[in-house]
Length: 263
Length: 326
Image 1: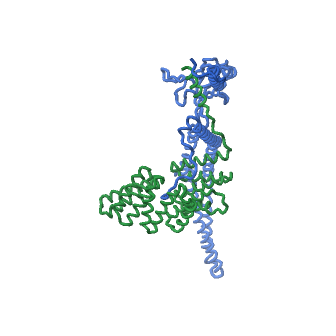
Image 2: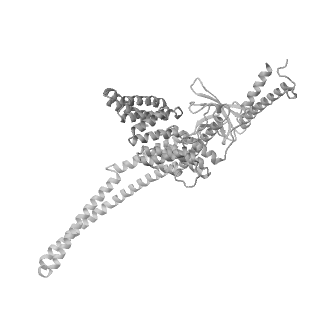
Image 3: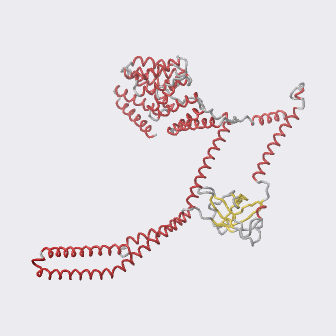
């Protein structure tokens, strides 16, 4: 018994001394620290700070000729800039990857950049350009990458914006059934399906889908989308003649939008 | 009965080997403690020294005691006596007691502008005996930045009041000087009008000198006499008033000079402190930044070591999240 105890004690002592993480060259460590700071700032909602730190990371990565890292940072910068509602600047960051003639950036980064450009252009209602960017992303993905569900969701949104509500509904319903798509993309698909049904005057189904999307968005804590769901529910409830319910949803939507503006 | 089959040569004396291994680890840990204790001065002989403070404000247990910039001890205990005074015990490394005299003074100072408080002990007079263990020293609080600001304020405010009074008093030198100047200007204007009149008359006289020489000369001479009389009266008044006017102007200038001197003195006293204050503030900020950086390094290192690495999520890499609806 004593021997077992001593052996266990020795084992514990040995385990305490795990190898420390090796130190990297200073510039690499600086880049990693700045990247960590940027991501932390982003989590805390400090978008300007995140943008500044990502710019610092980009400069360090470029000085180290780390093109793969620089491509990721360019995408991150574009995303943060988009969140800061400066879409023109966000597109410029993405174009630095997409318009690069020399094949220095990884194909995956090019595909991600093309997809994000398509999302931003769709938000700006520049549908033809968005379709071109999405086509580029889809070509590089070839239905094998992890972004394929996002691309399908965006395709459904584009169809809806172009007025093809039936097509959008079919695409969205197919995506909503994909278990590998992840909760966020599935919910996006449900929301697109609800909007398509609203356009097709299938108000009861639309209300039900908006409600489903709302439940998941609440669980995911996505404020802006909760507002969007509630606005949709208010519109559809009104069209269904449920005025009191509609005004309740509208009031809730307004409260959510107000809180989003205060942030 | 043995727990493990000792057929393999390597398992022979396993118990002894494990004991040696553990002993080595324990000796290593003991040496680390010993080294740390030596570094921290745990084995250095120390002697108590006492002082009484009016209040315990800014005094904390563990506060360093410095002599000529070196840490020679620390504040050990604080206790409130029956009279409401604070009895303080500091412990000083015995080897440094020889440097201190019985009239040494313990001052409470701040390290930098916003730094921690430190106790600084002065050497004392050379002709006094060496401070003995258990001896008592005098305590005082050194003036900090707040006191300096209050001093400057106490000097500036009376000066500003004086300037305000000098400018606003209706019977004061400045107002009186301005009034006299105004009166003098009005009188000069009257004199000029009279001279204009005289010159006009002269023009008339010259124009009609041939025809009305006898008729005009009389009034002209009368007018000239009157002008001369007026000028004489004015000159007399000017002679009377000018010395007092100049005296008042001198007095005003003296008052302004004194005010200027007082402001200069105050600024000269305050100015040398400003670069020091700024430098200290900059140093403090630099140190704080370094400390935050070091803390971040320590936390980062710890997060990659067992057992914390199992509970800390791995750092994110790759593009930040954005879906088809963002």
